Amino acid sequence: MLINGVSSVGLSMGANRTVQSRANLPPTMLSRSEPKMSDEEFEQRIIEMAKRDHAAGRFQSQDPSSEFHTLERSFVSVVSPDREGIINNALPRAMATITNRARIWTELSFEELVWKLLFGESPPLASSNQGNQGHQMLLYEFKDASGNVIAELFTGGWSMRSTPAENARSLDFITIYNQAWRTADHEARYGWLRELPQECGWAEGMSESEMLAVLAAAVPSWFAENMPTVDASELQPQQGQAAKQTAARYEANLHEVS
Image (tube, rainbow, N blue to C red; front, top):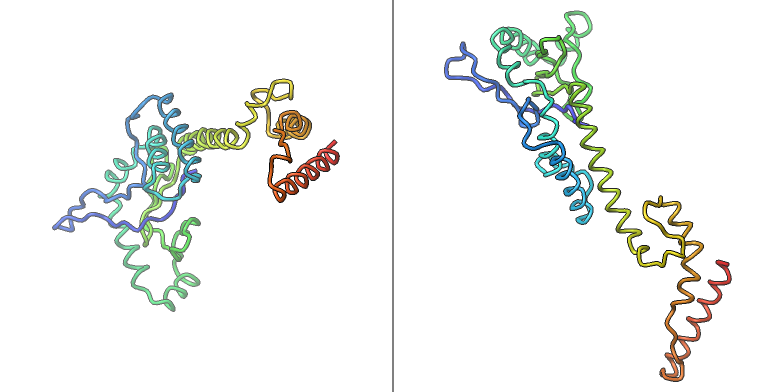
């Protein structure tokens, strides 16, 4: 899912501060974009990335600049609201509120802040997704035409509120990726079973538990039938003794399994 963290990016101001320019939004703040490819092509890209990640020992990279998050943003932004347009259109009427709140909550000392919180005007609740950002004061909420909050500006920066459509598409992205990654992992673990003869009970599409059952029942007998034989007389004395000990342990294991 998308994480609505606080990003410490300020507002882009012109030389004349009475005229507000466009907001300098963080790159993680999604805004509606045209699809770069079809959903089928997106799905193929996600699957290929998951396979590469598995081969490299990665799973859902946490690096915001990674291919995983770059592709996710591209995939989800297709259904995002026009956050950039909504925010910039709202800035002229929002600036007075933002400026006044910022002045109040950043100039107060700790004692004054506690006094105001307890006995004076309480600030709007800060976001719960703050991590280690500390206690952030909400300066303004940006809403779409339906009144849904799509972004918030705190004293520490921007926070994005995901819409239900964005959450659903993000879940689609994660589902496709996870399934492809698990398939690659399954192939790496059990792909060698394809080499077993069909009479061992192996078949395409088996679950992991079914494969383990096949292994427990079939592999010991299969190895017993296909284990290469070694003539101990052809080995050096030490090698011959080691071979006999290995064969004895193998026979004991076969009896235990059966």
